[in-house]
Image 1 (cartoon, rainbow, N blue to C red):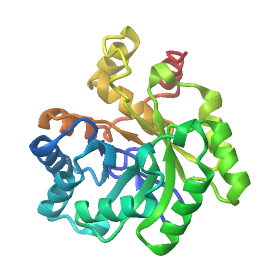
Image 2 (cartoon, helix red, strand yellow):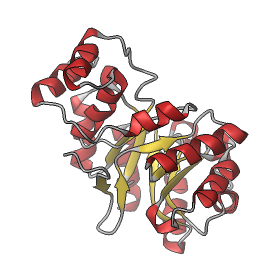
Image 3 (tube, rainbow, N blue to C red):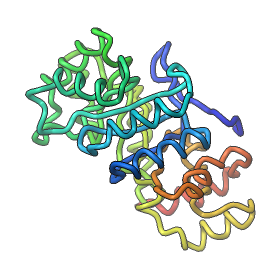
Image 4 (cartoon, rainbow, N blue to C red):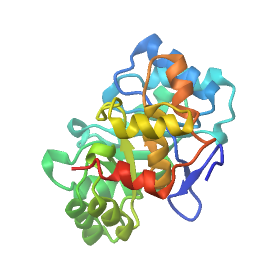
Length: 259
């Protein structure tokens, strides 16, 4: 698969880009400049969160990019200390982003370590009200996903978790697929030793960097990924991963780095 804009289907009508731009720890002008650089480089999935404190800056970058709204996929998240202000939080997020809705809204962390069934019910209501196209969660385990489905009959379309070669776990990946939940990975490079000989060798074979190999590995597993960088050249490099593919043997070698 070397399509420049691969997507994954979340629902029958919602498709999410496989590679997005994460904005964690990017504040003010840096968040604005980096998001603009990402959109200019071709990213169409932009990921932010109320906790990041940068939704207004990300929103300005989206507006100033000139890219039509319907070509962008915007994600934001509800922080655990706002579970008593669910609707107010999404209304704030939409206003700060300068949009009339977001594409994906996530429960950022399990509320007080629980599945947060009541919060999930509110998420479904807000989706039905049109403030977000679809809804999911972040940092949930498989049992918590099951609890949401058992309580409401409807599960998250996405679970965004820390994911990298080091954290690869076939049972976790298969568990998400069995449940029809897309595993979306964050911190793919922060949690990776980019000097690992396996990555260096594979990168050399393709004329790419180890970071690009790690991101391509996500694509081979059909796992969306949201790398982050404040450096424009790195932002562009992280998106330049569609002109090569990894062999099954190379994927297996990287898989073996897990655990």
